[in-house]
Length: 250
Image (tube, rainbow, N blue to C red; front, side):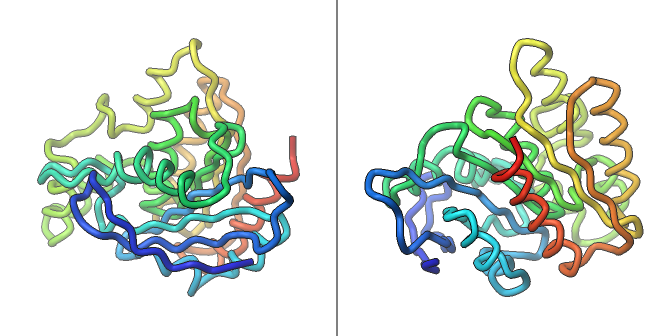
């Protein structure tokens, strides 16, 4: 596998950005490569998955392109202060990658996964554009934004939430994962969903709540729960299960 550190110019962000890309070294002639957008969590950036997991080794089994962008602490939103991180990751970046690399632009070959804040981002992207992504994986996902905001009313993260989302609560808006599923109704096919969380994770109750909601809506999903907290030891294990589910299971 090749590991490429890219410096790109983003029109949506009006700045240069850093993106890591893993790409197969040997691709059959005319074969378009499947692509996974792999998202970092809060306080993270584009180097996290390379430094703290073995994603390059895992991806090599599937001859897969893995794209790892940075979005600061934006919660993958078009921020209230005017920086369009959601548009960048969901729309602009895939177009750039598809122009730069020999990757497929078909929905059945495009996947998105993330941890914590990135788990929220993966769900938001995949459920906003269900016709563009085949499968979504959320690992220890920060799904309930309103609850998280309410727990940070007296610390600096409160302002960061407000920069990202503007007004609260976000329930019933484009930032609400539950609302996005409600909006799909019965008219659009929901992409495959994989959820994973440690049973001692501070986000575990949000994980259970979202599971129950998917069951109430009769939406199929895959679930993984193991003992542990909000930690890379688990995310490194979970991403292996995600790749099996994405690329081996029908």
